[in-house]
Image 1 (cartoon, rainbow, N blue to C red):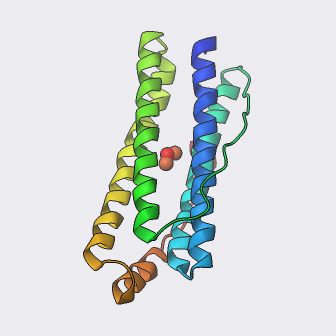
Image 2: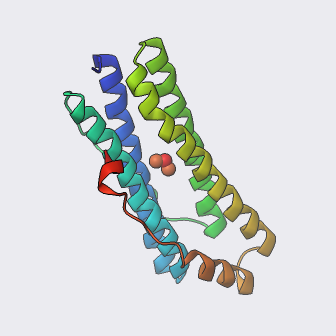
Length: 172
Ligand code: FEO
């Protein structure tokens, strides 16, 4: 059972996850446009993962017998300075999402909503991985500097990332 406060907060998180998807789709488009196809692939995989996060929450609200309410999605930025700029913005955004997830956990504890608290633990762990991935790529980009062979090598590496859709059971 979800109370109204928790339902509203989870609906708000769906909006943030879909905005994340939109932001990374925009970064994918920009990367492809400037010829960084590996970066474009990495951000496209990230787009799919964010939609998966949104749907996890969507399915949870629905299963609990409450109504999913979709809201307007803000326009993402469309211009970026460099590959490093995109990843610094990605990390900054993920820190904002981490804070939002932690606020949801705090609310679940306050509301004595044990089921939602357990449900959210997956997201707490996922955020550690997301920030870790971004930090790794930022470190590499700083190491090689902008442009040249180093950037090309990182682009090749990011081309190998593959999106694995969740198994049906873990989707909800
Ligand atoms: Fe769904 Fe990147 O947080």
